[in-house]
Amino acid sequence: MFGGWDTDYPDSDENFLLGVNRYTYIDTKTTSHKQLELTDPELFEHTFLYMNMKRVPIGTTFSGPDFRPDEIEALREFMFRGGFVLLDDFWGEAHWNDFLMEITKIFPERELVELDTSHELFHIFFDIDEVAQVPGRMVTWGGGGYFELDHPDYPPTVHAILDDEGRVMLAANFNTDLGDGWEHTFYKPFPTKYSNEAYKIGINYLIYAFSH
Image (cartoon, rainbow, N blue to C red; front, side, top):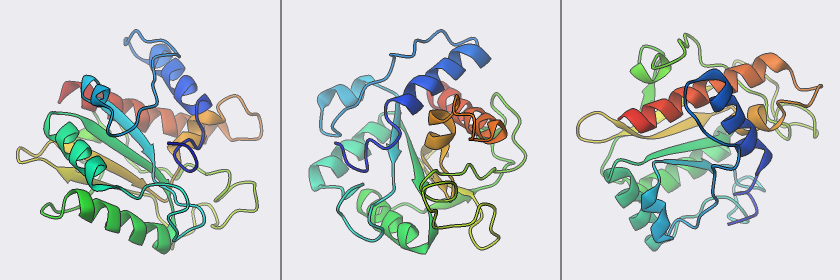
């Protein structure tokens, strides 16, 4: 699953795991990540699934998610068994509409809710009182950019699908790019404060996934 799927891979994955090992008591290695097809039976041996949600060009199915029926079945089963899905890096109205189309395929019967920072997810390890916008290199920072960072028309938000007990099964970061925050940890032109915010919420997601 390359194309839009492998954006930031593997640097973001390895740097994120390095941060998990550094900032928490979780013992992990930078190689403790794996790229899987959604229909691979091994998916059910894992708890935490990260996916880039961006389609390039915007509004097409050239790359990025366009879930097939067998992938939809696998994703639903993964989440109902206790898995946690994190969607990241999609921006503006066109991406939002694509996102809604894909989410409706997976969960036509469930409501998409916006989470505010009073939710447990924002305080399970780090206390996060504001959803920060982490710049994306090809969206808000470098590479020409499509959006202005911190523009009031494109606020960063977190949306979720809950199970019947209120557990977050799927979290989606809109108008932000955690993957770039992790990927560019050691790239001097990328502001450290944004990488720090990406690690904080990413670690909270991970701990929530493994404790719920």
